Amino acid sequence: MKAFWVEGLYLNKRGVNKAKKTGTYQQSYVEPFAEVVWANTREEALRYATEKLEGGEWLEEPKVTVKTEEQRMRSLGAPELPLFPRGKQKAKKG
Image 1 (tube, helix red, strand yellow):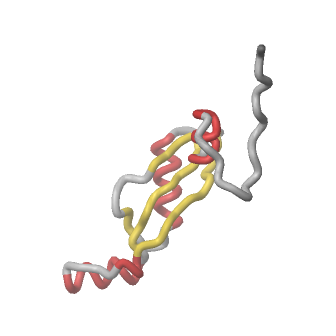
Image 2: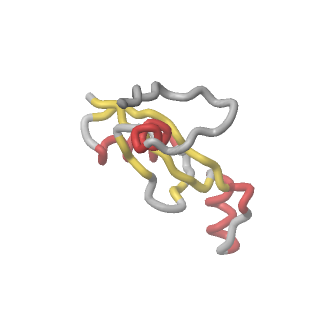
Image 3: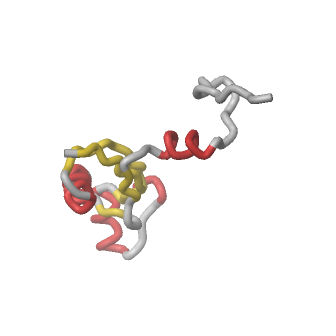
């Protein structure tokens, strides 16, 4: 089994019910979802994450990756935010 990170926005159960009745929903019903799910495949990880929504629905297809967004950005060398710990820096040659 692998650890998959599932990250996305979903409409909670109350928002889904409201959307079915009126056709629209308030932004207050939108919640973030970011969890690690242990699964064999990406599809299985997505299915487990959807079950954890407890009646909610995805606003758009969530991102399913092996790395977190933070790990991905650090590997690209993206600038760090102040007051947050920095990753290991490479020694300069020269």
